[in-house]
Length: 441
Image (cartoon, rainbow, N blue to C red; front, side, top):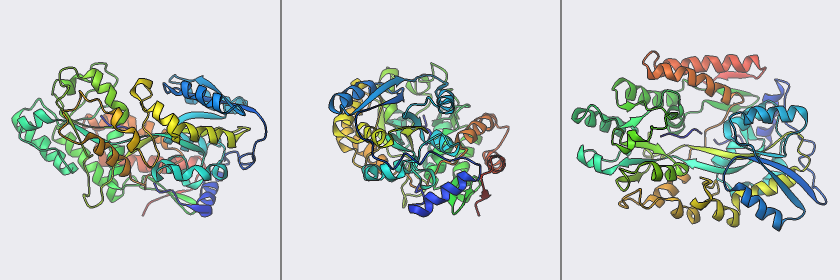
């Protein structure tokens, strides 16, 4: 089960680059209030839908009487539409949870506040990929709140039964899948849902691809680069050789494909581990964790989604908002509570040192203890590729990719053809938005 997830150009030149890129379409974030220091007692609003956050807001409020945070549970499928409407009407919260790709879209549409100056003192607390997720092109618009580095879980008992070893590379995954198919046509090595192209995102990230890259005053678009096509080739082999199941993540019974041994390997992350502990009753204790498969063992790299606390346009107290968001996502007090499975937050930190928070998130009955699960998770957190950037229309692109992905799964379209289509689609979309973009050379 995949998850969906740069070294942003640093310094003043990068900030200028993004400014030029965004101003080309007549938008940009708030900047006037972001550099000031707020005096006196204030109240700011924070939208989130992560369990356990409200309790931490209460702790903050008790300890910080000068900055009171009003928590709003904004759970729902239309939260991003509501946020856009709130900004337009001037009623937006100071802070809101969102993911990295939506932060990039909100920034491009001028719906966020540029907090580069006030956020700078907190940058050293977080990993480079996490900070890149809140700094598309160099200007910072939020604080990282969580990560989900990718690693592997596999049915150790069935790997032994079929005579295959835990794969270390994606070529190994293909070879293992073919070997298993020779022994049982009904057993698949992997799952790729028809509605979810995150597998391709993860593999592209791991292969070193850059679908979007800021270069000077424009974006370079690289859906058909050699690295992107390396990832595409692995997905195409999974499809062509019938090595993957296609269980939908929208199906409540999706977990049965793994629990019953019909699919015997998955790429996964920390937030999903408690879910498996609950939904794999028959196979509990038969799973092991392993490092995510690699493209180049000499350059081990994985991928990660990032949750962020974005500072919305119109926030009157960006310095206080940033101070709260950083406390929430980096203080030992907050992280100790939020990474406790009892909080049900599913949160995994985006800070540089995750070792204090790893052991307690691993379901001890789920895995058979023959691999060092804590080390694997810590290694994954340290291997997230720094090259990945979210472009100004990433969320829209992802929706378009979802439409094409279903055709790939039905063998109506090759992965390479889909990437060629996305390359042309993004270039046309950015042109229509007035954003300067060229095909990567």
